[in-house]
Length: 264
Ligand SMILES: C[S@@+](CC[C@H](N)C(=O)[O-])C[C@H]1O[C@@H](n2cnc3c(N)ncnc32)[C@H](O)[C@@H]1O
Picture 1 (cartoon, rainbow, N blue to C red):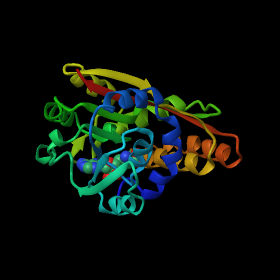
Picture 2: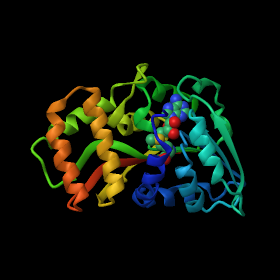
Picture 3: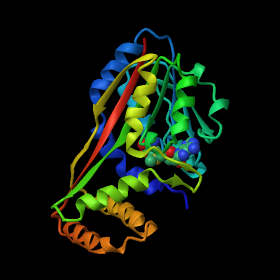
Picture 4: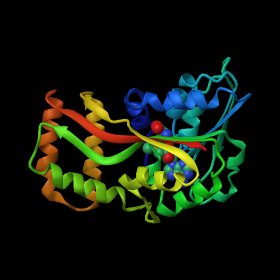
């Protein structure tokens, strides 16, 4: 089964859209206003959530989009919702492994390279390659980058231990192959792009999420991390959180950052 279930991607879409930092969208709009056409590449597009958000928010009337992902099943879902209109002239879907085949991607043809909920799963070396290949790209925008902090309320004494386990797991090998950077992703990308671009890092936190289904899905992620690391001391923590969610007594906060780089 594909790691990012499409059902999870749909479930988080509304929450992601209301968390994205709108100051960044304003900066994108003022940077693109003089371009005749706008070519956008969405990396790790999943079911196309970032495309749906950004294509509506940006004011350009001549948008050409490429949606890229390693998952064929997610791309099939994305295709179902790609409608052309006055603003969106063309949408191309591309099946590609952007880690393995990063050098085969011609980033020069894009004005804006973007992604959402994507950066934290990339390995460290990827950032170096990505920066080298995008030194002249006008705009780089990655939103909802996990920032290393989440909390379910009410509090439990194992919260801090669970957070540590979760964050360590975020940095573990994905598919047993390469280590992901996890919560360090925003700082890493900022360090690279500060050399060539004007950079911004702003909050895009999920605040006080009460949606039951969403919280249960997030709790499932925690459960997977616990099982993977064989830490059954957290069973009590899971039961506590589950009971609060099911009885409408729980809310979830997750901290994220949005990153923007504009070519100087
Ligand atoms: C957490 S999901 C985010 C999806 C979407 N951007 C969103 O905001 O809903 C991460 C996406 O990255 C894709 N992905 C992971 N590794 C990839 C790779 N090496 N090349 C291309 N896509 C990849 C996954 O298939 C998944 O769709």
